Image (cartoon, rainbow, N blue to C red; front, side, top):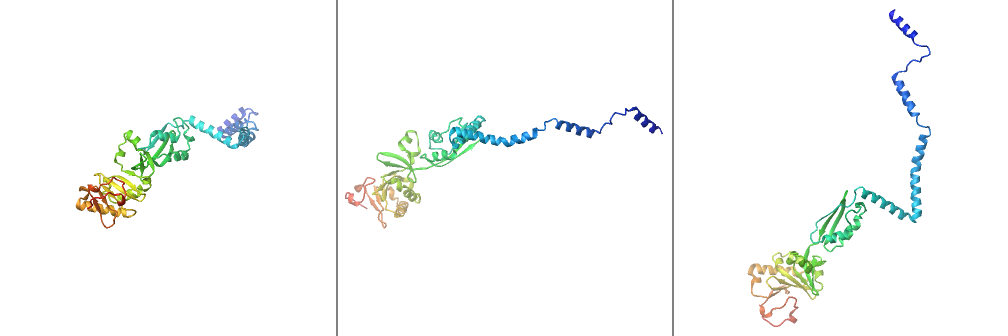
Length: 314
């Protein structure tokens, strides 16, 4: 057959010592095997040894540094400083300080309490310590400090509310409802603070310790609260109030203060008693109110009947 003749002819034409060509897949596998054998046989054990020795070398370096510095703590601190400097170089540094909720606290006081400057490593800032320093500022009642990476330090303040001006020893100090001193009222006025013009004054050595109870009582009688311009703490046991029309209100001690203020508000609502030509109303007796005319006028803070001049009462 012709096909047989052709195969025989082709086989006869091939040299006897020539090997047949392998299939393509076998050729590619042989080439890969040749590439793997290109690496020296000692390479893989050497890599294993290097991976094992790397942490050992790090420990030896750490031990050597600790031996030179004297203590492990100093070495750890030095390593931390190095890492922090690297983070700052990578862009994690203070670029902006944002403060929310600040009204009365001076910006310089906030920066001084933070102890931070532009360009300082932001990861080096102790947030807890910064928070504690800010809480020591007079106006600050609560604060939070957080990082907003890469470069913003964010501070949120809650400030105390000024409730009165304490007059004592020729000084005028703004206080909150707890009696805590906040600032010098004269200094605030010099800076143009208009808020202090609306605050009542409290007079007496221990007045700040009692101002909370006074404010709570006035808040329960809202008709009278706006008219109070000052309050004097008398004999360390009770209050005299001075109203905006110059009338002095003598309040009783203790819980009877709220009852007396309500009684006064009812009298004024029914008979406009505060608009009469009087200078003082004595509410120390639970069953009556004593109105004093100008003949028995007293200065705010004068005490009790034993010190009064005789005069007409109605």
